[in-house]
Amino acid sequence: MTTDNTIIHADCITAMGELAPHSVDFVLTDPPYIVDYRSRDGRTVANDDNAQWLRPAFAHIHRVLKPASFCVSFYAWNRVHLFMAAWREAEFRPVGHIVFRKRYASSARFLRYEHEVAYLLAKGDVTPPAQPLSDVIEFRYTGNRLHPTQKPTAALAPLISTFCPAGGLVLDPFAGSGSTLVAAQQLGRRFLGFEIDAQHHRTAAARLAPLSAAA
Ligand SMILES: C[S@@+](CC[C@H](N)C(=O)[O-])C[C@H]1O[C@@H](n2cnc3c(N)ncnc32)[C@H](O)[C@@H]1O
Image (cartoon, rainbow, N blue to C red; front, side):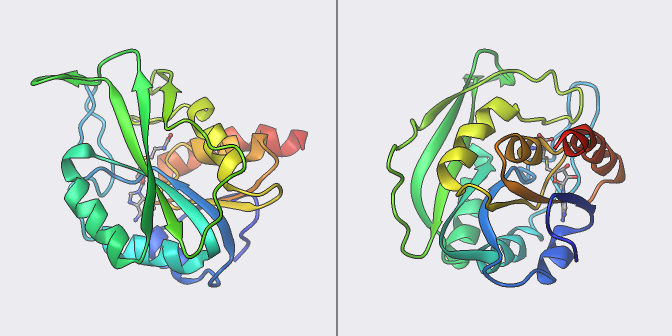
């Protein structure tokens, strides 16, 4: 399998099984939140209605990461027990927690929900960065035009700069519209993404193509 600078239309559980162990420098991913998500305009996210993929996915992510490396994973605050169990079972160690501050509410009920969250997970005996990043990162609204849960590349970029060495390989197994991969490419990192939905795969491939041509 070609693993450099590509987005592959595949189920990441199967696809990661074909990757060599210790072949990835950094994983930055935004998996389904397991909340049966439906956007205001009726769009859904594949596998957001079940947790069957969760443990196998993070077992593979841990296996393909190099020794002493990091994974940043978004998750849903009200499903933290499921995600934390999967991360610990895969032998990840939480070493930080990131709040992405929104200037708008995704929804409002008991509170106005105005942030996203992610854990910084360590594999093995990691070295802290020379210049630690703030654990609060600004999250600009993307308009979700390319994907119902599209993440802004500007919020992802500092994580890649800090936790992936120059020229290293960034993996996003749940790539969606390719936001992680775009940010990785803009920062001169190699990138690999998997996406199960054919339409999102096409969107990500189209987003990356002009950048690849310019490189
Ligand atoms: C939360 S979205 C990611 C959105 C992305 N961060 C963006 O900015 O566009 C999660 C994505 O994972 C995909 N997905 C779900 N299960 C998958 C699987 N087993 N393998 C690969 N992709 C999967 C969904 O289709 C969805 O696009």
